[in-house]
Length: 447
Image (spheres, rainbow, N blue to C red):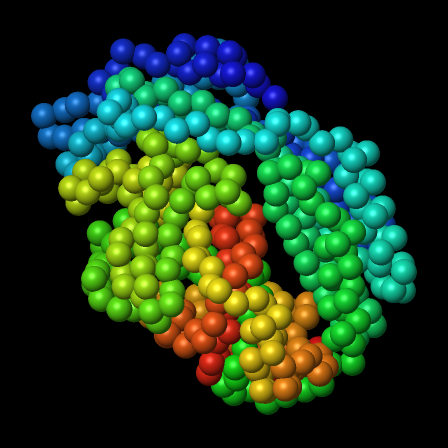
C-alpha cells in the first residue's frame, strides 16, 4: 500500500497554480477468499490505487469545472490526468451555481478518529477462518458458501484553498450461507479488526437457521406481524439513504423530507441519524472533499429533521456543509455514509415472545425501488424465514415477496430491540431488530 509520505508528495506535486484545484488519492488493498460447497474456490489480492483531480477556472460567465482520474500513480500519469482535467474545464459550459471548493474549518477542533491497528490479513489467515466455518457446517451435515473480504485502505485529499487530510484504516466483511436440501440460513459480520469476528459463532447461527427452516411450508400473501432481524432492517433503511437523506433530492424537492421538515413522517419511536464517530462504524472523519463530517439527524422521534450536504449544495441552499461529499463528479450528490437507527429497550428474545402469530425475517434479497416518490420498495425474504406462533418459532416458510412504503412501515413499529448490529458492504448501517405490524407481503415463491 502507498504510505502517507508518498501520497502527500503526490498530492503536493499535483497542486498547480490554477484558480482552484482539488486532488485526491484513494488506495485500497483487498484480499478476497470465496467458498462454495464447503470448498475455497477463489483466493485473490487486488491493489487499487485511484487518483482524481478537479480543476475550476474563473471566467466572466461563471466557473468552468473539469475532472479526470487515473489508476496508475506515477508522475507522468498524474501530469496527463491534470492536463486532461484542464481540457475538460476549458470545453465545459460555465456552472453559474458553483461557488467554491471547501476551505479548512480552522475554528473547529479536529477530533482524531479511532481506528484499529492497520494490518493486512494473509490468505492463510482467511483460509483458517474458512476451515473453522466448514468444520461447524460438517458437524450438522450442511454445505456452506460465502466470502471473506479483508481491506486495508487510505484516503488523502488536498485542495488549493488549504484542505489537507489523510487517513488509513482496515476492516473485514464476511457472509456465510449454510444450505440443506430444502433450506438455507444466513449470517454476516463487518468489523474493524479481523480478530473481532467469531467465524465459528457466525457459522453456527447460519447452520441453525438452515436446520430450523428445512421443509418450509407455504403461506398466503397478506399483511402479517413481522420481526425483522437487524440485517433486514439495514437493507430497508439503506434505501432511505439513497432516496431521502441527501441534499440533491432535497434541493430538487424529490424527497418526502424536502416537503415535510418539522412534520411527523414515522412513528414517534423512530430516530435515525448519521454519525461517523459511532463506535460500531469505520469511516474517515472527513469526506471526499476533505471537509470534516458532522453528525446529522434525519428523523428524531418521528419528526423529519434534515439531510446531509457537501460544499456545493451547502452553498447553493445556504446551509452548513456536513461533510458528506462523494468523489466528484458523481450523479448522486452528498450521501450518508453511516446510518444509525436508535436502539430500543427490549431484547430480541422478548420481541419474539410478544408475537401471537407472525413471521421472522432473517434478511431481504433483490430489493428494488418501485416508486421513489413514496419510498415504495419490493424484494424477497431469504435464507431464514420462519412462522412464529405463541412467541416461538414453529417452522420455516417458503420465501415471500414484500412490497412496502418505508415511511408507512416505520409508522407501524411496535418494538425496537436493544441489540444493534453493523451491516452493509458499501453503506454502513447500524440497525436493531424491529417488530412491525401489518407488514405487506404481496407474493410467494416455490422455495
